[in-house]
Length: 178
Image: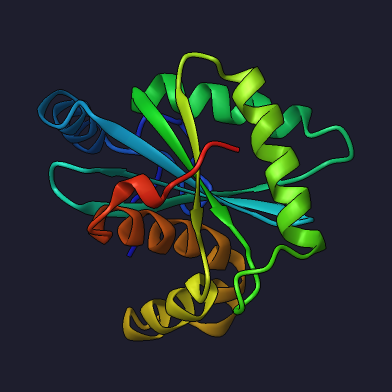
């Protein structure tokens, strides 16, 4: 089950967080300082996950609804970079199965370029996200999430899959600048 953003008084997936959960989150940030965020960018939503390359673990965080100007997305991502002390953001590159870039890939690459300009303090990279949503669906089914919860959390789980794939890749240099 994904952890909620324990430093946010109201998380996307739950209610107020306990003092113990907040203390544990602060300890994790200190123990594993090289933190990464991953994004699964869609036309309506952006799924976000956090992880550490040292542990090779990734956790779905939340799903951010997109508006026409994406101001809410930029504001929330700035906050998450600060709170999670992220040093890098991995953006899923939705290339086609044959490796070609369709309309969605071009749109996500444009989003990543804007993100790179908006959040200059972190490194932004693109990474192949093929089959991440399929893997996310399998993960949520294994976790026993109800279908309604799966729809709501799918993008965050897909972001976690992207990050896990990035960590597991033998050649992180496969990641590209947007």
